[in-house]
Length: 363
Image (tube, rainbow, N blue to C red; front, side):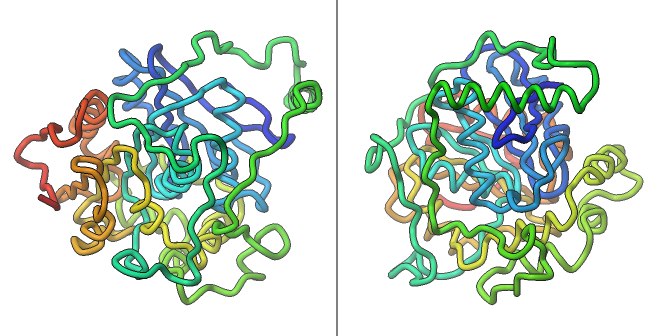
């Protein structure tokens, strides 16, 4: 187990391989662990990171941080602490939203983006005037207004990350956590580090601890109904049968989720148009969605056309796979890994080719 401290709390991650960095960001129903087959395959050529978001897996469970805005900040802090200047981002469901919002705000850090089962809805405001209640994310830093590179991913990778960050920090979990907090506070003070300014368009959960009982659902947020009608295990069962080989593993990771994490994180999307942000991203972006996803329905062809409007040729490549549900990395592991490798290595998305079973949704 590897971990760092961010905001005086533990962030768990795992890393394999050497080479150009790729960061895998999990979704609402799981943790870093369902990326293991992908990490093993890609680590031959890439340095692959997978972290647990706030409220999930073995990362901190402070419920005031589980919203989209704070998860974007977590990804920024993680890359900063790990010395990763740029990385290809691969996000699934909630993680896809985190990666989209991150790439919109920090285009210089995300030269390539793959989204899987992303929560994209036609909320208006793309093909025409933007929604008044969906302000764009403010880009900060020297790269504001610049275009992301269109070639292969590049950037510094942390080649000498210690595999045992707890060495010499104590014997018990309490001692380790206390010493890690003290070390982080000392490092930040010495470096004079300040937190990045985050977009106000991404709302924080409100109320005590972001609890769903204190925040009324927004009429402009389909995720509230989709993610709060059933508990996490019931949602997962829609896509992964109880007799499936991955069911027990996924259920075990779901059991680590913080209380009300689904409701609080869903509410952070109130009045936030994720598709509008995706339309503004210039980095090469591949979208993968299952035709039979019972949790997050695939975006319509019309919405995909609106997202692609104004983009450079080959900058946006959406695919929908027939007979695929919510977890492509587990359902079609070999095909998924081949697709991801092709995407990472292609000079131009126009030349990315797939087998006949891939259905291209836009010509």
